[in-house]
Length: 440
Image (cartoon, rainbow, N blue to C red; front, side):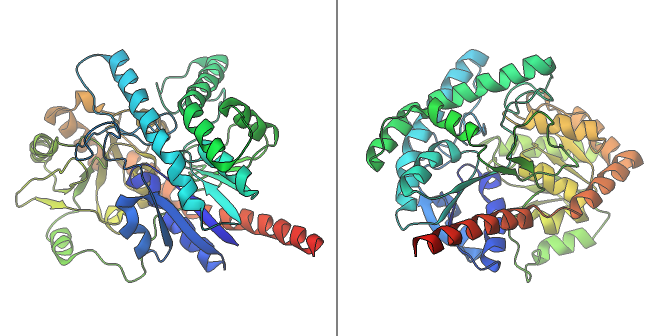
């Protein structure tokens, strides 16, 4: 089949789909990945066809394209970054929604352009599904959800974007349904314009969602059941299949400078904030060095969008490196709890120090702590050298945390999320061939 995967957002929202795409290509499919232009090299290096999307998650789409912003909000803000300001939560939410609407406004045309060469099947991420549904309708092709977050309402836990505190079964479901309506409103104008461009009859975004729900539109969720099992009250068609991982070439190796540092002493602690905290690198670097020294451990700092950096005999700053190669050789991982980094640290079997910023990160941080594989979360806004040092000491010395992390890693190793998606695509392909045979 000719397959188009569509993913938008930060590195963690896109990179896992390179591994999924490679798995599908090895199964004999022709695979293209549509993603923001910033990830052209990432996609190209995996051997997949790249199709650019116009929305760059590193910038505010309403403003100067050179200006960097910082906070992720998958599922509600469609991957847009919004820098926290001192003007209060209500103002921040309003600003985030405005930026999300601008992001979505550009995404519709980008998806249509990416699909213009044609496809037999669309695989849609959390951020691209709301508009991708209309695209699949116009193209008259099947589509499949491949989500990294559990965005559908359930009574078992609160919405992943928002408070990590349970509201009770009724409250959790009600909050989840409200979140869906917010997403529909954000996509309403873009969906209307996209349908007009595609020559489709008028249909509201809410009606499109309800149509998909009635049809039990299939969604495969790419996270581990060891971290979060499938809610019992989900409708048919929703599955939790295990992670699909960023593609790492078989010949890939860590740079010599990293290898030298790792061999020069005991396993270091990894510290990285991914796409968070843009522009705060110098302050965070100084804070991290103080915490590492107070905890008596070495550290590898990943620069990320914060441009984190520090110098010293016991500290090494690195750029983008495959977590699959680096994290298994660390003593613990300090991270922002994006879905991808959370999974990568668990896969490596190392304890975590969760430092969530916002969006789905407090949710994943709470799951890590409840699992027993992490210290108590240290919210980013409350991060100090003393608090980080205390958490680091526990993370590297508490055998119970390491034991639980390793047990979870073994459970994750028994899962193959990409293979489950390949199986689902094979079933769709069989149905597609049967229809073609009937037409012949």
